[in-house]
Amino acid sequence: MSLYAIGDLHLHFLSPLKAEAQRRERVWKDHEEKFRKNCARLLTADDTLVLVGDHSWGRTLAESEEDLNYIAELPGRKILLRGNHDMFWDAAKTEQLNERFAGRLRFLQNNYYAYRDYALVGTKGYCFEGPFWIDARGRIVDWDEKRAEHAKKLVERELGRLRLSLEAAQADGFRKFIVFLHYPPTSLLEDESGFTALAEACGAEQLIYAHCHGESRFHVSIEGEKNGVLYRLVSGDYLKWKPLKILD
Ligand SMILES: [Fe+2]
Ligand SMILES: [Fe+2]
Image 1 (cartoon, rainbow, N blue to C red):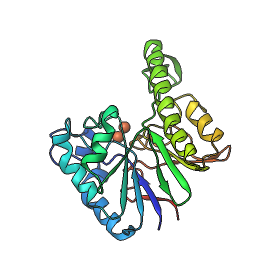
Image 2: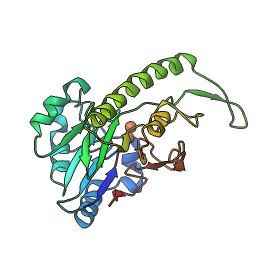
Image 3: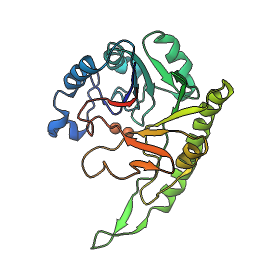
């Protein structure tokens, strides 16, 4: 029995949308098939796979249905977190998704799931990604204050959601946590945040995140151990579609 994670499948079985990188970069070529094969090779029915957001390009649940069916057919127990592209998933209607896909998929939002004596907690998260103004030497000299203010509000809302998830687990007696976010835990230029503070305060062993695509974005946030928390990036293109083992 093992716990695995990956993010950003960006499936599009029924949606006409697709990222530019998905058209031109080799890592994205037939990525659904590469991922399906890796899961078949690595995962068993006893394993748990957490998919940390950006599952589907579908703009509605109907357009995402085939993408979700593809995920449901992978081996093991599948737990899904919201990403910024998951238009099919209204946070306030998570319960309906859990009912509709009961026994096939589990949706993590303001709740938690148990894995051995760990609680798997999480939320989409948020971070400020610019725009920045850069000088001739490539140094950041200023940024969009209005957007930065807006980002702060979204970060606060997501922190509230993470607290709800954590408190639900604590109320049930859990003391060991793995935190899952879709966005990286820190904004560009930050080396700590409300998310890192919360992970440290609850004694989380690991914080798993995705959202970052392409070489230039893979290393924009915390990686490795910091203040007792192990930070790990699990974007699908970073992992080359091989789910990362989080716990045995
Ligand atoms: Fe993504
Ligand atoms: Fe994303």
